[in-house]
Image 1: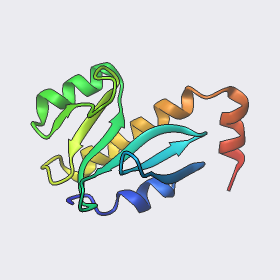
Image 2: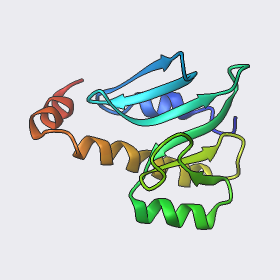
Image 3: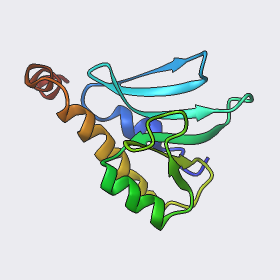
Length: 121
């Protein structure tokens, strides 16, 4: 995988939890119990897609700029995008996409839940 730093990067964000959804073989990253990113694993537990939520406009722009960004794998194709784990999306671009995914989902939570997360840790 070209993005081995993802786990550390995402877990440093306030309120982020992760689990393994065994029936899908996905490592899921959530904020406020809402999914914002998943690392999809193959039958050998090797990452093949990183699926994340983006605004429709940004997701469309990323798909046009980078062949390794495709509509969300097994997800809503408007709001979710998948990046090939062995792809060539630059690290800084990937970090910005992950930041947006986190922010989008966090901002969709109730004001009370957002405040709890911001005050935690």
